[in-house]
Image (tube, rainbow, N blue to C red):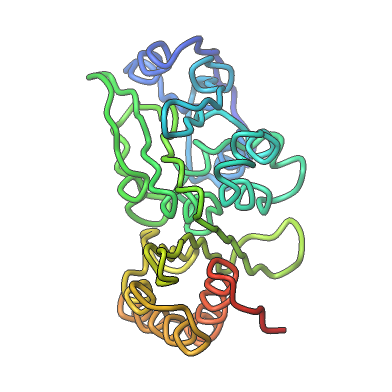
Length: 291
């Protein structure tokens, strides 16, 4: 499909971006990295007559610590997240997820806000953000709102974002110092791969060596990215063992099928998901890795 003429304007603030997107005289789309938007345009899945560039809005371009949370601007690129010392120190799970995305060129252009707002089922940052209890702060024409990331994406390429709104940033609580994290991804090849299945996991033990907290969040697995509470329940309050992580993996497969039913990809994922859950739990809770 040929790209027809369209207008372009750069917003200098979230408020200006929302005003431009709300203009009824144009069909406007926000532009950050453009790595998804231009592909969708080429396929004829989205149309516009004006792009509103939000990539340089100052309040969307920072990574800062605010109290016991890290705030990541929605226009920060995946590459910037991977390299940032605050992310490396406190949120390595998010760094690993961003590092798994596409190629260096994609990571240098694509943004975390765009990855969430596009709401692809295979979005690599979604499991990490949900696992980390991230909250999206959204600017709308009626003011600001805060929504947990788990409630922003409601299905493949569907969000709860109000019309003409922009995600300003993500507030991510800093996990306790004893927390350990893991992110794994399965694709059709080793690099520049779209996820067939991914998994974010976080947890820590109490003073008695029992599981005090565990979060298991698969990606490219269910219509809405969510914690797998049935798999978590197997581990919670228990001393981690080989048998326990196997049971948690199987519980994850059962929960996946209960949510999605049996589909063309189920025979593969029914085997792959337990293996990913087991591998992540081993890493988080210090059990030997099976090779």
